[in-house]
Image 1 (tube, rainbow, N blue to C red):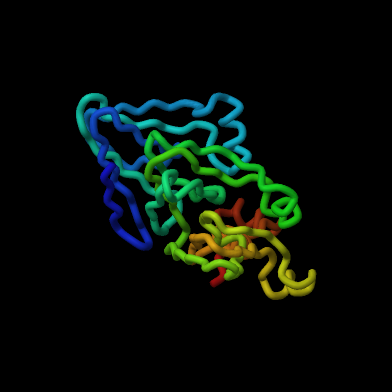
Image 2 (cartoon, rainbow, N blue to C red; image 1 turned 90 degrees about the vertical axis):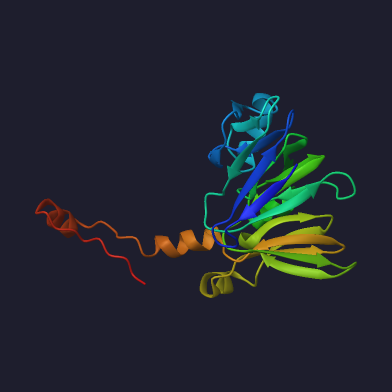
Length: 242
């Protein structure tokens, strides 16, 4: 399956070329455009139970399957945030891959996307209990907020990443923990990190959606009784602090 990634690294899209009998699966809302003759089927892949598990992993209940029938065509996908797109292989010599919620963009029809229980370590880390597990065989594409960096870890090498910057990983052992105590969490702006131990590969993103939401929340206007009165007179108290 041929593909082309354009507009990297901040506004990336991936265009997938579908041949006769080939299929691509993508998150709902990932479609940018497609050529004439592409069929789109929306459904709960893996049944209702499988789709509910995907929702627990932070993905949408429905997925879209794209095919070109007996002809050929192109489909272009993009993530919801300004950032990069990266190709990863699944299956064969590469094995399965774990992705965080929101990082999966699209894959060939031969790739299965399931939700994997992360165990108590993710519960204690506060980042949720589930990860997405990509298995089967074929290409897949991940999306990010900001650019994507890849780190290949040697045997025994450790790499510590803020949990909000983790995109995906393969083979590496991993665990989550808090940085310091409550004081450092409150005043340093840092909280949870994930420690990866090689051999393995880790993909990270240069921006954190959680950090951006926290930054934005602190700058949104707050309603007061006086502002309500101003608004009723046609005024506005909207302001954003930078």
